[in-house]
Image 1 (cartoon, rainbow, N blue to C red):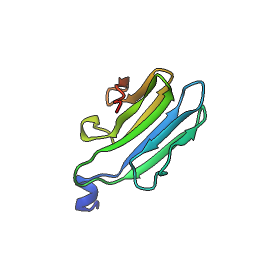
Image 2: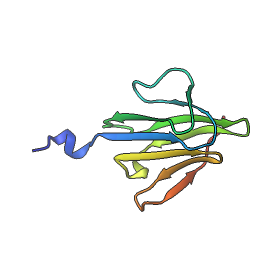
Image 3: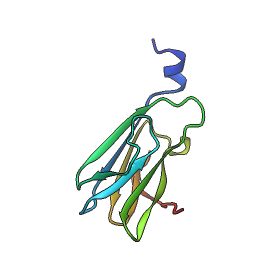
Length: 110
C-alpha cells in the first residue's frame, strides 16, 4: 500500500531532449543538476526525478542560439504531469501535455 507521501506527493520525472539540429546549452534548477551550462548534442537528453511537497517549481535555462535563449518552468503544478517530457527545437521549448500534444512555451529572457 502506498504511503501518504507517495499518494499525495508523487515522484515526478522531468526529461529534456535536444531535437535541434545543433548543440544547445542547458542549466536547470534541480538537485543533482550541474552548476554550469551543460552542452547537449542533437539527440542528447537529461532526466531528473524529484518529489515536491511545497512550492513545486523547477526551472531550466536553455541557450539555443544568440536570438533564442531564456528560462522556462520545467515543472510546476499547472503542467499536470508526473512524467514531464520536453523537447528543445530550433525555435524553442515544447512540453508534451496531458492532451498528448506538443505545446510551445515562452522562454523568459532576463
